[in-house]
Image (cartoon, rainbow, N blue to C red; front, side, top):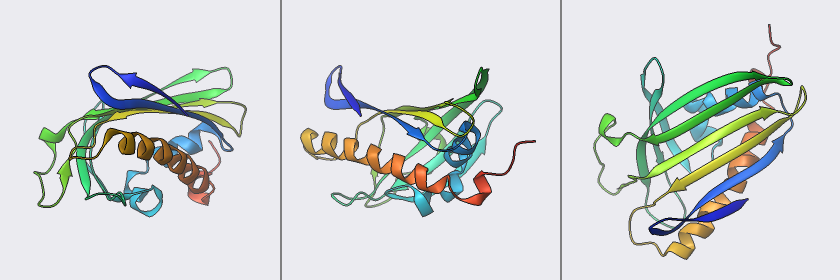
Length: 176
């Protein structure tokens, strides 16, 4: 896991890179299974598709970190794929789209900055090199050193969750 300063903010940008023992297609299916996020992604309590456009998805997510009140946002996710020598590579990038989602809820802090990307590159037939990049502001009055620590540890938990979830049989249907 790497971090770097973000211009004009005490919060850092993070990037986690790691191997996942599954095809890039299977890992991509896990990443795209937003309806299942509350059952396996850390801290996610609600995740739903609001709209499917020709080039993107609009999704709403609410998460419940242990150290503070619930947070939420609406995101626009753009996905793409391309062939490589070892198979298909995938990219899902996101940015805020709160204006397209539900209004703010009482007791839930709205996140207005959340940008990131999953990059999934095949590393053989049953291994994927996954790169997760994110910069997010948490809203509220949480000290930046705590937010930075939480963001880094959350990436470790996200990778662990994806590695566990990709073992589910529904993601490993033979390619046709």
